[in-house]
Image (cartoon, rainbow, N blue to C red; front, top):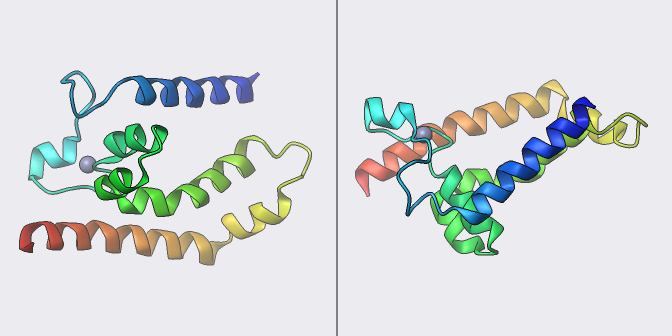
Length: 124
Ligand SMILES: [Zn+2]
């Protein structure tokens, strides 16, 4: 039942981001970190990128948040292993995705992306 709810929430979220362009409406949630600091958080641009990605516009999605696109296979692997591995089909993938080295590499890249995008944004 819990997995069905997770799947339903994911599908509803994808449906919302398919139908609604966050760029053209004002009611979509805004980034609190960006609002407070004027800087981008690692996830800034994710809603707009998801909308573009769901419409098959990879270049536009990449422009909004390249780290999201690069992260999607890993994040998808985490979700798959966490919520849909009841038969052990993804045990090998789980060992890779949840390995401390992999998690630490991902977190280091995330922080590097967070710092880097703000340096590039404010200098370019
Ligand atoms: Zn943000």
